[in-house]
Image 1 (tube, rainbow, N blue to C red):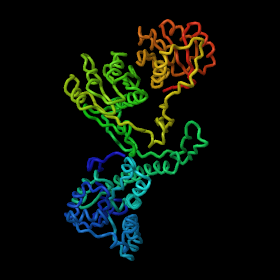
Image 2 (image 1 turned 90 degrees about the vertical axis):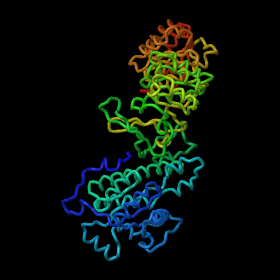
Image 3 (image 1 turned 60 degrees about the horizontal axis):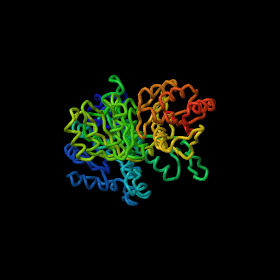
Image 4 (image 1 turned 135 degrees about the horizontal axis):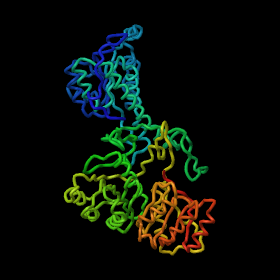
Length: 559
């Protein structure tokens, strides 16, 4: 959920209500405080003392408040029951929840409170056990996770949010400045209480979503309640019937694809891999388009098994290569299309060192973003001090790991009114399943280039053609409505480098017309999925051109 800037987002005070003037400005006389995160508690303590508010608390929170000079009424003195079960039960009691849920404009509610000697709470301050951070720790056991499933906290928050007409709820230290201001002025407005009730329900929804995803895995289910039965499981598990997402704002962006579009990046609270866990070391703010290109760059670099680099422009690689070192891979990737590489996004799949940095310091070269799992201090120093664009380039560390767990292993894409979901196309292809369909067999030294080319084409926008020399992408045809046009563009990009290289297609050739162009360019071998009703015609054209062709029987469309 979005982070709240205290006061800045609070609507103008509404000091009256149609049915009861007290619903507008509500004095704070009693506050129930139960927080796991003690950050900023000193702010609240000072305001509570100054306003003469009765503080009710228990356990560690009570001790912390007392240490800050606040006189605390213990919850057990209200419930008449001690904290039990190692703290699992402390606030779950009618004397607490009636004090939160009583409606101040209902005489029958107030009579019940009077009958049982229960006092109302006008302010609830609760933050929840850190379940998401616990399950992300190395070595976290199921028992550790289960113990950090908060029961009383969400119940208190939901009760106060439900009864926001008569109680205010604060769910995090980021809202303490507002609480202090309200205490200082003598109360809360209905508009403020509505706002914070909405924030409260956002936080409990997110909290429950994280727990639901974890519990599904713990129970051996795909998120959404579909059993995973390994004996009956196909190549991929069934898609869930329900995906529960609680997204928090990770990054505010200046604008979206265009300046008139507002934008931000959101991620599930319990994911810290992929772009959700990026750490920017230097440079200007990342933009919406930067992040789209960065995602494409990181994902294509991640498909490369050896040290590899990808150079991205408008989500498509204009260069990519693997080599013995990141330095060599980056040199080859940048050289593939040096014109398009200007202003590009670069990603590598290994440590980015000083020698890799030197590749980008040639005259006339500029990149928008450099991404890597990690940077050496020397590489950062070089990139931040030597090039003319040192203050502009963004250096971004993207942690390795599976980013798809919080989305039930699904890649999601929004459409108007809904979401499309699919398993990410990131499983390596199996060359042992490939079949040579022509009379001529590819030379052995083309095995690695063919594998690399078919890996590259899966991250190009369809219709897509990739041309590689060795393990370097030298030409790409992307996003064309005609495959023969994609072939023509890829060959034009590759130029003379196409001769002796290999060509990969993300889907079958629907007609044999591309083969003549491929022959004229001197391509040494073709790899494609096959599957067209005209496959025999395409194979015959390849045989006539004396070009070996491999069918993979696996398509890699990317729209």
